[in-house]
Length: 469
Ligand code: NAD
Image (cartoon, rainbow, N blue to C red; front, side, top):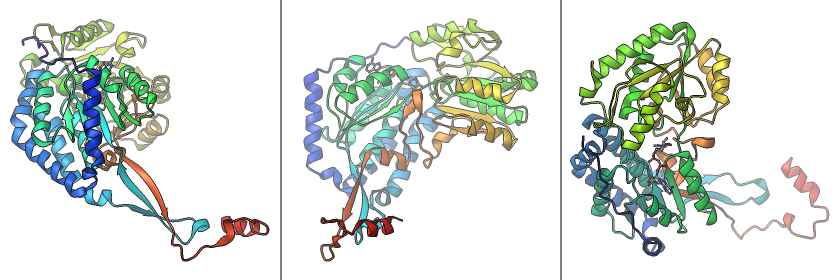
């Protein structure tokens, strides 16, 4: 596999970034995006363009890291099309002002929450699901009536170029526009005063984004990473658990923000469960996963070397093979890992699964709670007491019981982190809400004007006390 040389110029100037943002701001101020029909028309056009350009996008994903057509469709293109369909179906209802009860103190009155767009938003994405993680929030931004500048990841250059062409084919630059580039470009963009910033990426870069946003008090969503634990209790259905964990861990070669990062395995089932995991890896990817058309590669040499260094942090139970020229790392399970080893300190973000064992569930829960709050948490058990104990005594952005990763496919569930794994959430209506300012307006008729609140106050307090109760 040839090493990629990024065809991306990282050279937007501060002035060019400012001009683009100002251009979008003028367009936003023309109020065209306030019109729901205008938004729907563009979302439909985006849907049509994705259908028309699907092949190009899937090829770009393959060129960037050998993502198979199946994974490319299910986790990127198909995911976004599903989100678009859901948004188009419900947008008119979501955008309606929501009537809420007015307090007795202000009666008669009507009170409504209006969802109004923030204005010009900046959406920054990482490389691991380079299409989904840029376009899904973008759908929310457009649905809510915003303009948007999109900054794809420079580490997936083919997908970045495909996205730039896609957006250009549907949106005028003043409505939505892609700025390709890397850290320099992002730094120039972050110097501007945006109305909203939506960032997906690593926790450390999230801090840089939050600091830049704080200078202008710009509201942000931060979709970050971390180490997502996966509990496997002795009461789990071991066959199903093995399949669902192997699938969620080695999907995209482990380069998934919500992949199970490490196992917390009940010692009583350590050997039989790990054997099932090894057999499942073989069932999914064959005797030699390097030959499997379904198994992707590591995004670049830096991440390949980082991941390779973790292989000596424990005993290899299965996998461990690497091929630097191909940036291939076999689906690997590591056991006898020390909690202080790098593989247990860093977010792994690759196809290496360390196994920590426990004798008592509360030890495993303590282990999780002593670390940063994870983006996802998984618990495999057929015993509802175990499920409830784990959920009630831990916190995470989201997660699954008896599954991995799939919680993010449910549009009704907000997808996001907590603590070091992020701030805010999106998907489905949550995306619309994320990109909408909730403006509360009280409307009173002038016909009645009850004098209770006006001075002089003498004798009025007792009536107010009666109303408040
Ligand atoms: P990253 O944070 O390095 O990069 C994300 C974006 O920030 C890119 O567009 C990049 O150009 C830009 N960037 C990088 N360094 C920067 C800097 N110093 N200043 C300004 N901008 C900078 O993340 P990545 O390596 O592309 O992706 C992996 C990380 O993203 C992992 O930590 C993973 O968990 C996280 N992630 C989170 C989610 C989620 O939904 N919560 C999804 C996918 C990935």
